[in-house]
Length: 157
Image 1 (spheres, rainbow, N blue to C red):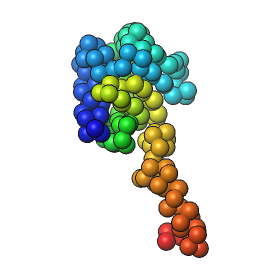
Image 2: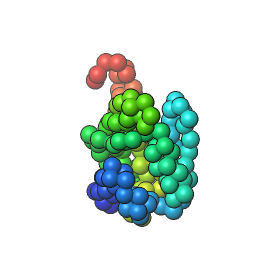
Image 3: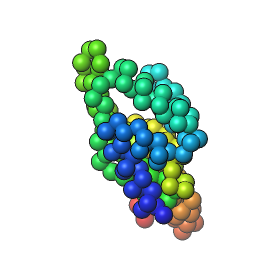
Image 4: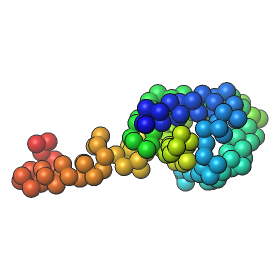
């Protein structure tokens, strides 16, 4: 199932870059939630297909030439993390901006149900339940076993 989730997220990214709203919505759950990072000026959450339409409208009002360049798709089971760079050009100013992103996409039954935006890859991994390259529960078990063997967290053993 997770390879399918990666494919869905990739198709949505392509639809976003082509402003293909119908495909984007087709791959989105009707109750989808988008959560923008609080450090983003004017950050908001968008809900449902209407919220997605509002998000697209808001992007188009302030920016032109918005695109997302995916560098990495990380499969974490029921979630896929897309990591890359978004490029923007101010509609009136013409100012160009590139911003790194990491988005945790939750997928269920072939539809994206939630997108949570981060500016930091490691923060997105933690939000998706991954720590030190492993699921959080597995990482904590390994840390606890290491400590029981008398190791310390900084000794690399």
